[in-house]
Image (tube, rainbow, N blue to C red; front, side, top):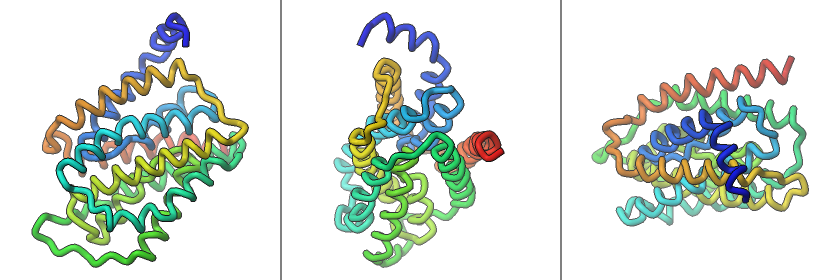
Length: 259
């Protein structure tokens, strides 16, 4: 990587870098990677579509890796309950990332995915408290949820936590802290699997000069977010604001590529 080119990337994309920093801080503070918002930002920049998926997934991995370590240290990760969720999601996320899709199909899928994500984020209001009774887990149902979400996530370039978390909350799967921990693990393994699938795709393409800057940016943002109390950015408030922003982007994408 050329230092001069990196500085040019910073100068030409300073607004993208600032937005990525904000997203990383906000999302990491409540246990998410921010993949859907990274995609929304990149989709409006004119960056080649084959680079968007890989960049978003790599940023996801950078942010949630420290989240997973933190949650593991806090003993918030129930590996036995997470197992069925990732059993099918990992191979299907790899397959989704490997599939070759054209630009129009990618942006239509992205627009629909972002719109669905915005709706689920807006509607998800129910949270299990520490004293509530959680539901019994159904391994088959969890594997099915995980597999479907993993496949879509690999194709589009997100970790899938934005879809998984509302489902887990609505089904009283566990407490908010453990659901956030589960979402972080789910995002990490699916993002890793998805990027491996994309890497093996002959059309894999990425601008490492810009991506390296964005990775450094979200790493810093993730570290800040991990140290911010969740009371400053409540999950409900974050979901409402993000849902509106993502919905606007999804409509812009769908209008452009469907008409």
